[in-house]
Image 1 (cartoon, rainbow, N blue to C red):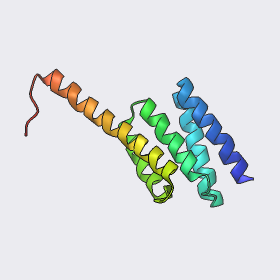
Image 2 (spheres, rainbow, N blue to C red; image 1 turned 90 degrees about the horizontal axis):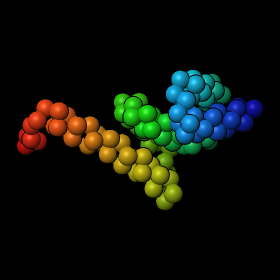
Image 3 (tube, rainbow, N blue to C red; image 1 turned 180 degrees about the vertical axis):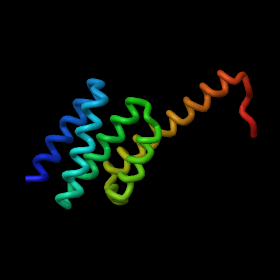
Length: 115
């Protein structure tokens, strides 16, 4: 059953980003996405991609978080407030990471923001 395998992977991804097991979690993410793609089961894609974005944000891997947030967006229903809230929470976290990175560069370069 692909859906059961995907849900089991989803649990592992959540456990992984919380515990900090980067390498193992990334292999679980790849396996889950492959099962989803091979089986055509996308009903869990919102959860799977949300957990994946959380994993990469927690690791401060901004480019991977952006990639998976972009993949998540089509699965977010415009009329589902909970999905919208969670999507914008993840997008906000990503925006915060961009701002934090910019501020670090400003401090390191000893330069003001150029307008």
